[in-house]
Image (cartoon, rainbow, N blue to C red; front, side, top):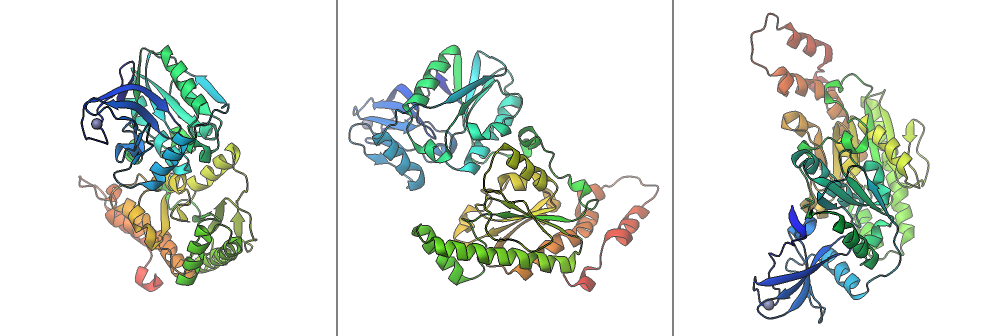
Length: 437
Ligand SMILES: [Zn+2]
């Protein structure tokens, strides 16, 4: 964390002359961005710049206050351009901000979770755990879109809930800045959380956030095999180059809704086919579809848990389903963070153009070989038949992996009886070659 109030972090570099003699006179809570108001001690250039937190820890943006010059060293346009637009058009509309105080402290850490992307908000919020555990002497204040209130962990001292659509967090809200500046006067010291964009999941108990226990891998073989397909109607499972081309076209020219409808229909057919193929391998499989959108009906046997409107109850219901799923399957970018945090395993369909974004929307905390076995990334051109084979193998081969490669069964000690290995093998391990998986 870094200082915000009453002293303010000032290790900045002038974007004009590269001097590190920079004076900070103020700070701004824009929305996504938390900014320092700076003047260069060498060339007098006046600029605003990101505090090095969250995505700005890696690529901070600066803007000249008078000439509106944008300094975006790493050319992260998705991050810099909306900031420049918001700086030019500040918004003075009223904003409803609810303040919840659980445990008042004098010295606090402020965690800004505002973001226009659903996954980014959750990932920033996950930083709470380490602050609560490592710095109990400080209170933790979470600045969060109101719609994420259901994920607030216990142990925070305050929540500042902004009633705002995610897309609106890109705006520069003067009322948000006013609110924060008024509130922080209540404290003797305020620090800013670094709000890592990809916090360490091994240090997080997802239950603290979702209030739903994640799948216990020790019980993998005890429950009826269950698979959940994460559905979106703006991200598609595209099995050929032609449909990829149409999707890119539809994405770039947002009016091409006909193609999206066609792609949704094709995706529905593929989900049906996946279910049919899986049933051949695992006749008692429970197959759920969860996500946003209600287009088209699935075939009988598929549990259609999709919704068009997402609220707390829907989110909680979906979390319960993920937590009971051996495997969740989804296309990269389908809000896979909560599904992969709660399920035993996952298969992510990763388009080639997203190979560079691998792991970004995965929250699995599994380690060692069981973790590798339960974590799969496949090209999104995979056919329903191949995907069914892969998913089936994750059910059917699991016993062999657990018996021969898991920590649980690889213990050197004095045993009176070692027949449990043979018994396990006889009872649960299938002959993989005979099964032709
Ligand atoms: Zn300068």
